[in-house]
Image 1 (cartoon, rainbow, N blue to C red):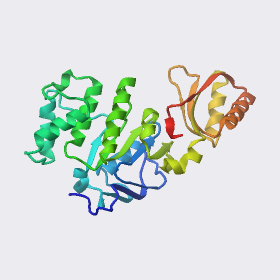
Image 2: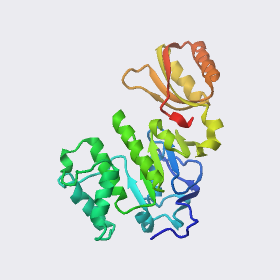
Image 3: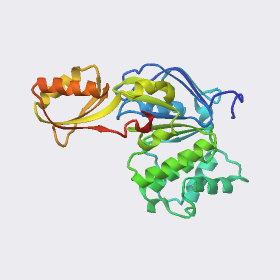
Length: 308
């Protein structure tokens, strides 16, 4: 199966309603991606990111709305148009990289004549040159992640999906990932990348989707969302006294989303705040008026990165 029409977007989503991990329905999603465009989907755990990717990959049909890949309704028939890397991809550890990619080339019926070239090219693209005979069990987590990307690219898909992009990667590996994804974008692939924070990925993104606490906060092209994105900030606040009162107050505040409490310290909270610096200063004063003593606070600059 190939693109239905030269004018068809790579990915078109209209009125999609999906359920988060908590079972709640999120507001409708509407967006389109053409060749070389990149959607960054950002949000805390259990916010619906993985559910969205599973639908785009054709692995779930329990949704309301329309999703098309290259002009075709998403489903088993479009899987050959999509390369999907899950957050915890399984690998056959006893195989070599060559054997692993051969297995998936068979599954996607990749032409035998071009198969050796495609395997070499996919390994080169993900910075695993010379790894053909490497046994997977001897490889680092980062290298296995790159191999999972090579597997998702072996059939030359138009749409590339990757969940938990930055999880467990060292800083140098994150930079390497950005290089790989930049090359994919330059080759005309449409990308959908999910992560708890955009961080280094933000410079790649033409589109962004923010899912927080079972809510869709923003979705669309970055240039159109900038006035809204500028006020979103992921904050961390540590308390000396009045911690329970602080949690109760923050839970009631309509500018606070996805409040989480540290299980390690017991006096640290993290939440997404919708407001500017003055608005956050006002929030701190209201907390102090509730009898809460604040030790420190800081903003996670990586949450939206350069997209904000």
